[in-house]
Image (tube, rainbow over all chains, first blue to last red; front, side, top):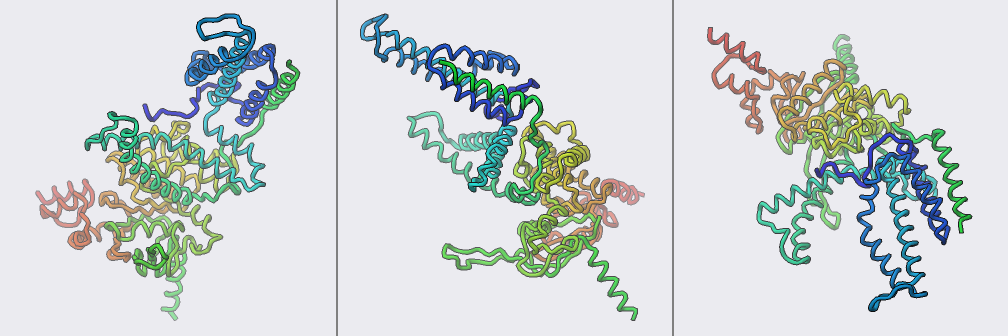
Length: 263
Length: 294
């Protein structure tokens, strides 16, 4: 169903990781990504894998679900691995026609593929365990200091959450407009790519018009409910650090420092 | 001396009115690219009107009669070109009072989708109180209470996208209730709903008026919805052309038709078959019909 689309594929559960403060998860993800680039031998993967494995176990997310998340980058992964495999100079260990596999190439391909996989799994774990609204709230609070430099942090966060709310509505509307145009003989399926792109114009124009109309009405409704920017706003679900968040923070710092010592 | 006292009482009575329009004129000014005035449309024309606390007022009018412009003046989304609008004694022209006025007079709009801001129902209901800076503990209470009053408490964690049109409008009403308003303006809330959704919203509005004493201003196209009102005001070209109880207004069916409106179906039917008196509801129709048979 088009209504059920969520961005970032949230996997609902009540695990410890799900209940962690969104800010901690955000900081943890950034720290983890940095840590993945702190070592250059295979030994470094041991603690990284252990760390990732621990989070996966704690987060209650089935491995099947995580493997599914790797699918979109599968092509990129194979592509990069092959290039590394065949194009790295070094001592030749296998040779066939014009293809040469070198020891260095094998090492590079494995290293690169492993690092990329860990990178993607680690960062998607954040979106699996955090709802989009928690994520925007967390980012708003984390980036608040940027307000000093006149960065409109609250406004951007508000825009993100409104965008998230309207994605399913606009998708539904696109569907409706496409059907209406098809009923009048529009053809979206034949012809080359340019023809098809051109055929989308009668869909996009009404969609834009309606999106602007919606935006106007929404702005009016927000104003009618006393919206006047982020000043003096309180929250129904304020972000608050619990004991588990402080413990996680200590663990994250420990992990990154430890990774810094890996060869 | 006596007439003087009478006048004084009338003045006090008038000052007590929750919503006061004093000779309000509003013009939509359309400008061309160079900023010259292209055309002026007068949406409200020297309109004066008082609505008392606890009243249920229905505003009728054909398209372009100024109904929506009128509604937008009550919670300071629009400000009069001339004249004054006072809500609970506060002037909508006073910028410091705007937030206070919007808290006093909440507004439910026509399109259910375009007034829901958050991704879960309870967060959307909390949007108004959040803007007002209500402390979290009290907010929780207000949100739960508002959701219980419209009967959506069990669904509080669901996404608004899963609700029917009528339920979405109820979320919008709960969002206003959480702000503890004295007055709710409904701007054609049922225009995009199916019949069961319509009934749901009108019944909710009536309940809020009777049980909680909230002043209701219902703007509508649909005559059936106005039958339960204390007073009906008919607008045409930004002026009040008819005013009175539903019975008074609907007994002048010809005038209404001149203004481009239809009578409620039962009233029309009763008049066509020649029943005496002005019939407003099904029950009254049955009674009048039985009486006529005898």
